[in-house]
Image 1 (cartoon, rainbow, N blue to C red):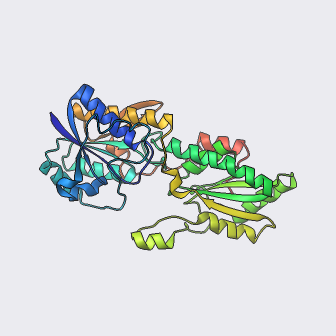
Image 2: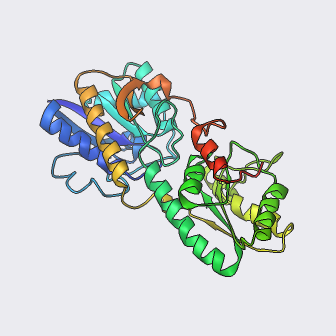
Image 3: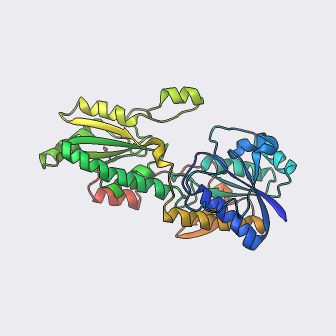
Length: 347
């Protein structure tokens, strides 16, 4: 049988194990492929034989609902696509399925340009991969944010507080927007719309005047005030050697305390959004994408990725996603619905 590799690049997201399971089961039941996993994302290519893990029906049993990735993830390793292609040949791989976000799919496109038979599968809780309506992991993250919003409303209303919930998303505000919609937040601050602290304060004051004694704000980690820059976690940025966002909610809390006579608290969900069992939607989407990826590489359809478009999972050119970031559409239906519901964006 043909030997095919699979790796989970970038950060972890609920549904990764479901994809691995789907690829292996489809390869066993239908397309007859021998699947091996590359450990720790692209980093496994540099680990010799120890970087490769055989994947069988037995090794993927029970993975549908399990969070994380049994192969491990790595969003720090930055290697040479030509080296990855060479390692594929040395390992006897006749194809590679790359499960990852925008960065990993960009590497996939670079490897394909060098002649490697590659199929991509988009994943990220941030939902910022271009060319697909949704990535698996996003629904799970949004469900957690919405649930935390409801919990925060209980305590905020009891103590008459302003609560700011900071969520992930990097430079895209999809988690914050959908979390605010699903969690009944009053204000959503996203990277696509610079906010003004005084406008946020005015919304809070107006709510207080209507006897709404609490306010819940959902804030994307990449949100920035008008004329200002993104807030960085300086320690982690220095440690990683690249920009790591973090602390935007506490910065806003400090700004609001100077403008209002309210108790203001901030909270960051951070990596809680990445863990846990995927929702049923993410399990189904990940499984559908895994099956399509196995079928594609089994039939030698490569230099493509599995895209979710109009409720259909289909193959699309890697060039549709590589090097691109999908951000919130300022004129889109989700943002329009949020404004119609009275959610303020601080602009």
